[in-house]
Image 1: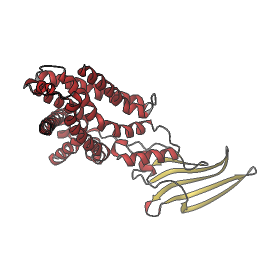
Image 2: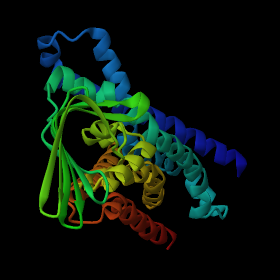
Image 3: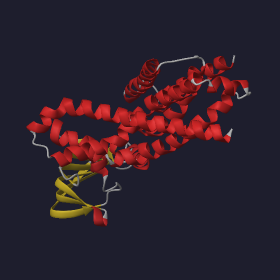
Image 4: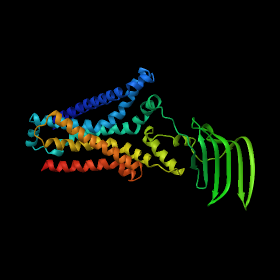
Length: 357
């Protein structure tokens, strides 16, 4: 069986790579035609356009893996059936579980590549891929509205406007509470974060303290260092996009946001779990493709491509829809990311058992 294993593995891998390249070329062409007018209007250099599409390839590979894997498994298994190799293997006592081994071996390698791709490569390409669209196509500005950060259990930092450098702010206040009672408040015209010394500098600060019904008011012009137990990347994290973070950066981001008492982290939690769940799609889809194909005596390429597109887009559509529901907090973020995998594993088990009957 080692010879047939190598043969199936090679055929499956070659077909998968060809399918992935075809889907990447198709999606790139569609996007290029759709945005060609914008490229000309903004006078985007050709080199930057090429870099943009090259940097988009890892994400395209990740998203089209379910389509490519299913198409490859259907094509290879169908080819074995058409050449009477599959009936010969069955006659020799080769079970469906044994037939799945070379497919699962290659799918496991694809999963490992996609895991690294999803958790590290795609985020590192974000600046060119999505950042390119924001700079040259959408021209989306970043909103720097007032932010409230719980610095600790009894202190709240408020910044009226965050600077474009994400290391400064204006209209600043730092309030300290004892229970529900305000005991002190510091207002400042502006602040600046000094990352080298992990210092927060207030400028033109006014201090108020409240005790026994009396208020003590002091002012200090110029710069005044203030102890604030927050990361010097706090403002940067407030405006960060989960898509541009690696899995470890996103995990730390969520932890720090929770510590700061910032709500609305459902989207970040869904994104974190999706980065981990999506790479397993290839391995799961194989469990559907091979049993599905062995149930047919013959199948044309058009039918196999149609089945691949329907099932692949069903998976991606379900992933997108459940993620959107998870963003709104209607379902658990972990469930929103993993439910498509769970459902498709169940479908694979059903197909596997029916193919063995």
